[in-house]
Length: 442
Ligand code: ADP
Ligand code: MG
Image (cartoon, rainbow, N blue to C red; front, side, top):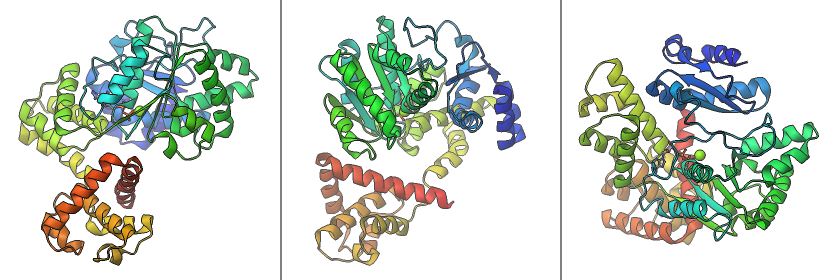
């Protein structure tokens, strides 16, 4: 099966990519299960690069062949055996659907704390050391690449070291496991597995949206674990109330314990994270280059990490020093890709469509509340997504008197973003609609 998968991947990528990267992969049969597939790569650099670029693709190909999407782990060969730990410590024989292996580098020590993630970090440490007490469940939410998986797995790694029984799974794997056991009439086994652990960690719970049967089963699992004071930790891209397609009895339970969000990191935190990653991966970058990356890459830390790996790989292949010019040249495409020339008109078009307000009204001086709000959001997103526009350009475009009116709108909106969770979610959704529409049309 693994060979077939890599063969199919071959047809999807260029021959040189295949030769440079994929041909170096070896299937690790011993450590693979039906929902957790392990490949090894011969060095750290390749491992990181293949993981970032191809792991998802490989998982998709598996899914297209077997109907089940496994987690694909790419590991550096010397890692196998010693560092890796099997998560499930259940006394049962290891079932084919055994839980995922945690990434051992996702620890509290390796997590950089800043004001953007302080609450979530503190909460995660607290449940790891005091499970099933105050914060049950712990619900961590926030945008992509901001450290949710890292934190939930840090809880798992910590707990395993304390000898606890930990199940870490994505909600997709939970769903697949559920369906598998249903089909095979082995629900008893399923229930035993999920209800007899000290920690149940479910990543990306939002994927259970509209999966009623699985939600029903999860509801009972949740109740049982909660009753026994076993710790439950969930992550999601949105706060409970905002995830569509969930039964209310579940979302209210998600709010029983503590909800903690992870926000995009500020510049300082980004810089510290880059330094941390360089330290962990033995990559040397001077401060100037680090600042350049932090300033030019957006907030998704996963993308920042791949940029570092990409940069380092290029420097090694070309035997070059990583100077700021070299970095700027190599990262040109990455950065361009990130800010895909969003225009002010794109922003207005999406806001008008989503909030059902005429574009001409947004750009007028009308004072009706919904129009004022749409205009402010427009100004805010224009400021964030089109940094090339000056205050006075924005004033002109949005039909405002001058740049002070733009500053006023920015202040207002920043206030709202700080105080009104619903509003923040709305703005984030609009932002992602604008960037993704643009992505699709390219
Ligand atoms: P999410 O699950 O929120 O999409 P991840 O937890 O997968 O994001 O994070 C993406 C990458 O960024 C991971 O490799 C993680 O280690 C790293 N990362 C995110 N936040 C931090 C942080 N505060 N400190 C160190 N690394 C981080
Ligand atoms: Mg994640």
